[in-house]
Image (cartoon, rainbow, N blue to C red):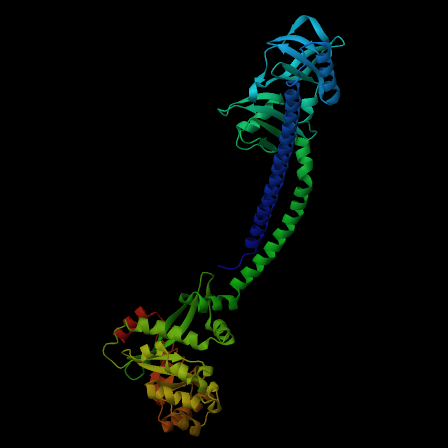
Amino acid sequence: MKPNILTTWVIAPLLFVIFFVVFILIAVFDVQRDAEKTAEQMMHQTGEYLLSTMMVLQKLNTIADAPCSDSFIERLRVEVFKSDSVRDIAYVDGNRVLCSAGSGFLKSDGLLDKEDLIGAMERKFWFNMQLMQAGVRVSVTAQQLGNYVIVEYPGHFQSTIASSAYDSAVVAVFPDSSYYFAYGDKDITRVLQRPFVLGGGVACNDDPRTYCVAVEMHDAEMLASVLPLLTLGLVLSFLLALLGKSLADQMLAKRYSLQGRVRRALEKEPQNFYCVFQPIVELSTGKTMGCEVLARFQDDIGGLSPIDFIPVVQQMRQTWKFTELIMARAVEELNRCDFQGRAFYASFNVFPEDLSKDRAEIISTSKPLAAALNSPFDVVIEILETSIDYGSGMHESLEFLRKMGVRIAIDDFGTGHSNLNMLINFEADLLKIDRSFVDGSEDPESVRAKILPIMVEIADTAGLKKVAEGIETQEQADHVLKVGVELGQGYFFSRPVSAEVLTNYVQNH
């Protein structure tokens, strides 16, 4: 699977939607907070109104003058004058109005309509009392405590919950949690009935709960309230989506990058590295005598060539960790193979930097190497001829490995600058002739055909067994055997295969 630019372009609108939904939720929260705050303010105003009128009623009930006497009526008029909200005060007996501050003593009794609500302390309320004023019927609010009724100016009680931005209503709450609609927009009581109403808020008094105020914001006001935030949210959501896409691009680039894939395999997903095995054949008999262990890479994105991932492993300075990983995997798989009782060896490629003098202790404590040396096959370590460096302490490290039981092979011989004296001093066991000297060597007129016998002679003088790499034809196999090469490796015999296929190959060869 290859990186797809559509991936991040799908992320961008998704992030935009997510961020914009967040801003919408913030806007809704602000609307609800404002509604609850407004309801709370109106509830407190209603409470102050009820308290002030209660104080007036309680004071009236302390008047000692004879009811409806001139002094009594004068006292009523004084209380009306002192109050900003009281329009009139009447003295009643039952439902009969006997006198009032405004009309004085009534020759004929007036009758009160049945009250709308009886509250605490037997306080009675009329929320829509009809009175005649200058020949016009007006609606007023009235309250009664004891024998006194105060009549308020039209709209005074209503002003406590008036708002240009909200519809509102006041309800009385009874002990059984039922309620009575007192004043306002009756439709707003749905705010009390539903768990959520956009732009709706409720506030009630406490200890005990006797009244509540419900409000609902006008649609136009709600739009005006949220529009600036939603506009800002629209812009920020777009910018955040672009930022998110940019970060996603970087994350995907890191994930799909060569370095990211190799690092992830080394640190978190070692199963992405796996082993294949290329048989090494005795040319004179055709028997399989060993194999070279080769590392391969496959993750959910795809495969990588060793040409690509090996340099990254070196750049990360994780070469020995990588070697141990491959060695452990190979030993586990080869231990399940049947080598038909023959001497068999597995050859591992080792990075030259891991053979420096200061690495000897690390190598000596390697558990995968110890497991390999305890396996039913010999362990061979291959060193590129071009990487041989006597000055780095490599010779001492190889000698240390040799004492542990490891055999040494010089890989890609002919590509470096080794001479006979160097080969003898290096004390290797195998010499692997580079494929470039095998290809075309069967042609007696070619330069390779003339060089190959010299390389064989050098190896024989140094006491090394020879392996010809890259054999692809029968003619090449016959020719290298003829000039004295004992072992061969290449596609002519087998491509790199799994351990299971290697077992079948060994049984047949």
